[in-house]
Length: 393
Image 1 (cartoon, helix red, strand yellow):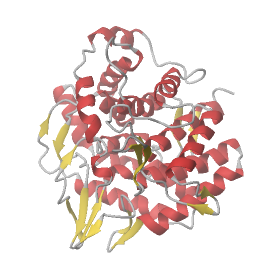
Image 2 (image 1 turned 135 degrees about the vertical axis):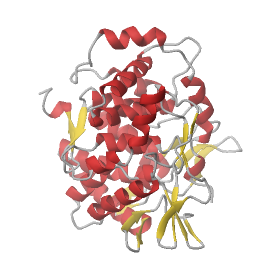
Image 3 (image 1 turned 45 degrees about the horizontal axis):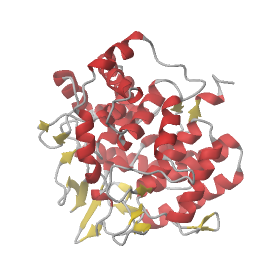
């Protein structure tokens, strides 16, 4: 079944072209001032909403032929709206998701896992392109709702988040003998002939901690331990693969995609960088991913693709990679790497004639710059701490 594995192929060429743009014109911008204040207008977020979010709450990736919307895009948009204290946009995004991805079966009493892909069909109409759900987006949706319920004191968000989390447990979690609970990439198509396919980028440690804090009777704390085992085992050279697998009682190279680490795997470094330093898994998780730090120190840029088993690297990663790596460098205390990331990410605020903003650049750029500029963080229990809850009061 063709599910999530191809979702970024359509944007890879666009991302690659964006990466080739010169950043010389923005170096002075990045070096002339410190980080923007964490309070007040979040211009990067506003730009994202204006460019990629329709009035009805649909997040669009214009770089794809189908003008697709993914459950991932909706879940990330909800997170950014919560960080920005923008409840109106949060509700628009949630309403569109409910209507179009979940067939209006999206409440505390009837929570359907949303379809992962929606867009233009072959006949020109618009609708669901693939009804399978994507478990990473489902995790983020449940997390967003639970945190929104807590921060905005709204029980309906909390109840829907709890219902979604229960559906994830029912449909998207399996047990690996000797390891523990593990997240399947989706309900359908990932277990076949003794092979269970897995995606390391689907398991953000802060999100798992947050779910464990709000839902202590669930598998979330043990899933965090299993996720660390997956990342540590499948990154022998310090590089995460896009995909991996479980076969014959052990983690192995994914039989379908091989050992390449690229547009999915770059988020593994991002999630590791976002984890609270007090989390007992934060340091070992970062230590398991040291290959990327070493490679950037050697070459001055992250590789677009890398072999997780040999460490062989090719290409230069696009702007989105710098967004993902900024928190990683900050968590490692790598000032050189963080400085490089800041310099490149200044391009997000620079208009280049004839070049449209790239969806994935903007999304990972918001995660990265929002974190290093102090707009949000996660505490050791995975609870979101947005700046508007403290420094901006």
